[in-house]
Length: 164
Image (tube, one colour):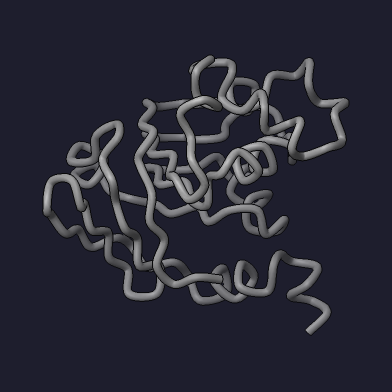
């Protein structure tokens, strides 16, 4: 896993549910690349044309609420998202993101959320706990990612972690 991630912000509000991330009608799709073609379709039909590899989703409270579909973090990852920065995560989404090794869920506070804007280019140093807003030339300290969570992510998910 890379220690420093760089990309653009795609910003959303509170309570982005899993049906907004990947609508239920696509849950029979087994190819993650085809699944990614419908990422965020429930709230942002243009998301897949805007997102680039390495970009970030920034969201408010309770990101990933709703049904416990593992497809949501998979769709985000295959669309190009490496990390989601949110004020809080729904518990099951948080675990699915980590356990599947799909993306890094990063909790941020209200102040950071307010400072980040759609299309800002940012750099996130997950090991040092620093977010650099390259667009606004600002630096924010984020909550550290728990050590066990980082170990699972570095291993590529819970199954790979357990095999070590």
